Length: 210
Image 1 (tube, rainbow, N blue to C red):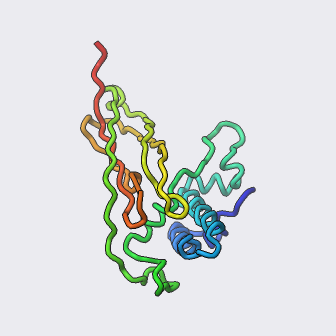
Image 2: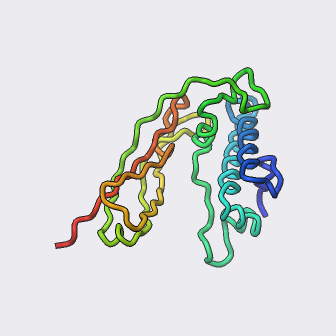
């Protein structure tokens, strides 16, 4: 069966979406590596596991598959009915998105996370902009495109590293060239003092073959 995602978030198996979100807030604040300097290796792994548990349980389809098949079945599904799940998110960026206006690691930490002191907004990392070409038919009928984007992210110990992020972009029928799709927080994140930047994808129309 693998790990129990519900236990990782401290919620019951019939938890609501709001309870899953609150469970993530509590447990991620508790296990953030910065808050556990004496057990940093364990905290880093638990912090990532908590982010993965949230990523699964907050998505209705992934949650149902997990409930039916467990972690092993979710990641190594029997048959070919759906793609294997793999967590590719950034646990530090997820944490930042939850606590953009509150600092759960402040010395005055209290159990009521909603009442934590407000800190000034962090500077935003620069925007990553990429272009993708679609044929006229793809724009008219819709399609799914995948692109690989190089970005900088923060790893354990807040050490920046380079990675190639695979982005899936569903092109909706009727979209037009010149449209810009923004992925919030999916750009560069090179410093813990900054908010993760955004990723923008500009839709272009491919010139017809001569």
